[in-house]
Length: 371
Image (cartoon, rainbow, N blue to C red; front, side):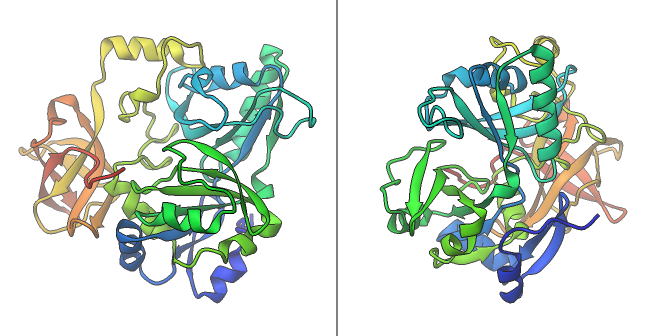
């Protein structure tokens, strides 16, 4: 099956970007170097093409109830322009995906005079069709009145990130956006193109994410005079920030985890009713046996996904889910699941790197200061 391409694939190719397959997409992994792009975002500003992320639009009289029953957070807390991080779980409380849910203006995508609630949620790369089918299936099973549209192909998605990102976006937007707080969003116009503009991101830095109509993607991208960044820097940045990557830090099939194990229990609103709620209430009451921790290698080496984690006696107690050489810290760092008795910061562990046990220390996450 051929890979999907972002709308700006040709432009990125002309820029001599290196590409990689990710979630069924052919995406730029690197434009100049991962370190150059990483440092631009940590110290100044960079722009990412993240058009591989899904966009599912939900509107209608029962849109709020549908969103509430299929995500773990409390959707009713969202006013227009608000957003929240949430998990999508199955009946066992296992994470199917993680997502950001945005409350759009009422009637967005419906009739002009409609006052029906509207939402956008962003599933991870390659999961938009499954998410769309999930929402449709449960809507029909529960006999709810809501329209669910997969609009992934209709939009490009850009992330402008870094300490200088808010000022850059403010200078380009035709309406002021600088007063938006974290996880707030609005429609803003860029060279005549209306874009959903959210103060969200996946780097640990300040910045905005823009949903741009596909036909106007190049026009809007060209407005941002800053370092283009690929998925390589996005990965090193999010690991430093201690942020999860679907398919690595949790996977419903190969590494099933609850939000409590994955360290995102704050997304679970047990006072609401959602798929998996009862299982998660039990998990919350009983506690977890394993949890995701951050660690830093003390010995020379780089931890990678799938490497064993052992205790000081050499007994395997866990597995690395994500790892990298941190460009900011210039130290090898990673994430992995270990039994709770090994999860306290300062605990000494070992990571098996190419057959050799390397000393590691459990650290608090995020590894670097974030917004």
